[in-house]
Structures are given as structure tokens and as C-alpha cells.
Image (cartoon, rainbow, N blue to C red; front, top):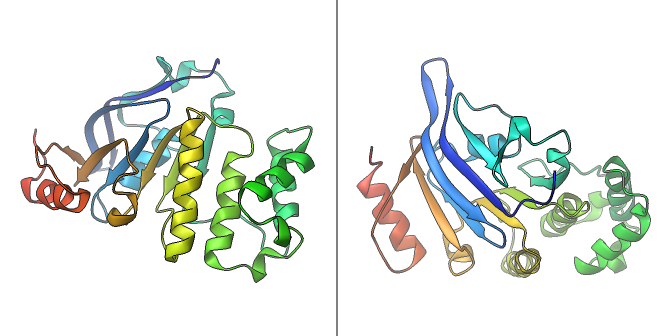
Amino acid sequence: MSDFTQVAVVGLGRHYGRRRALHDLTFTAQAGDILGLLGPNGAGKSTLLAILGTLLAPSAGRVEYGGRASADAGSDLRGRIGMLGHDLFLYPELTARENLVFFGRLYGLTDAAAVASAALERAGLAARADDPVSSFSRGMRQRVALERALLHGPRLLLLDEPFTGLDQASSAALVVRLREVQARGVVTVLATHDLDVVDGVLSDVVFLQGGRRVVTGAAGALRDRYRAAMQDGPRS
């Protein structure tokens, strides 16, 4: 499929038996957007990311990538998606460079070594490229994992709690990298509880509660909007 510049969620639902994890979600994210998924634990954020990443099928509704449903988008759709979840999917006994070269080859990159070197340079880790990942701090591992998710030039980047466990410097470095990804026109969707970090970074927000979207007219700081949304509750 050609590069898509829009991801649309249309009437999306997901249930596990009688339990509804998501109910009738509809929203759109455009190229260059950084869309935040905000809500308490159990709101459905991780389930939604898994569906967006084609790792989980919806029970109702659909996701459209560039106007085409995932089922019609072709087998290369996953090659246009980068994902970073709670598990960083790094091999601790390998060096940062070896990890990125390995995943680059899995992505089918013919110049995996050169791409890995450039990624480590962007991440500010060139001096530690040949050190084992097991010797890295949480923030450093997170930076390597983010570059792993970006090696193949995805058009959709999905991040699940990317700021968890990061100190202020590492969080700031991650924000800078997200800005660079945004400038390339990538659609980024991230779930986070770190409201103060992403305030002013997000292009748009989807508030979730109990698997439903909460629409709020509250203005002001993101934390105030979040508090108002959770008090308002979902609207049918």
C-alpha cells in the first residue's frame, strides 16, 4: 500500500465475552499528529493500541489506514507500523548496535548496519553503541527501543506508556525525538499517565473511561482537562 497520511477509527468496539474493553470509538489522526490516549488503568488504552497495530482484531467497527480497512490494506501494512510497548523487546546480552542491526535485518533493511549507526547517533548513544544493553539505564534502554521501533521508517508509531520510569532528562530527550518524528509526518498515537510531560506536546487527545470516549468542553492545562473528563464520564 502507498504511504497513508490518515488513520481513522470508526465505531470501534472490542469485547471479551461479556466484558466490553472498547465501545463505539470514533476519531481520526492525521500525518504529523501526536495523539494522546488518556484514561485510568483499565480504560482500554492498551487494547486500542493493539488493534491499531493489527495485533488484535476488533469485535465491531474498523480501523482505516489511508482510507482502507486493515483487511484490505495488504500484507505490507505492518511494515508501515512501529510499536513500543511495556516490553522493550531488546536483548540485554547484545550491544545497542547488535540489537538494532538484528531488528533492522528482521525488517528487511539491506543497509541495517548503517541505519543502526545513524539511529544511535540520533539517540545520543553513539559512544555507547558497543556496550551491552544490560549496562544501560532505563532511559537509555528506552531510547534504543524507540529507535528499534523507527528503524524501518514507519508511517504510524504506537507508544504504550513511553515515559514510565524515565527521569526528567530522559523524558525531555524522548519529547525531542517525538518532535523530530512529527516533523517527518508520522502519525503518532501514545498512551500515557504522564500528563505534565506531554502537555503542549500532544496535537489532540482521546479521553477514555471504561472503554468509551469521554467528550469534554473543559479548557486549560491538560491535567485540568483530564480531571474534568473523568468527572464528566462517557457520553453515549
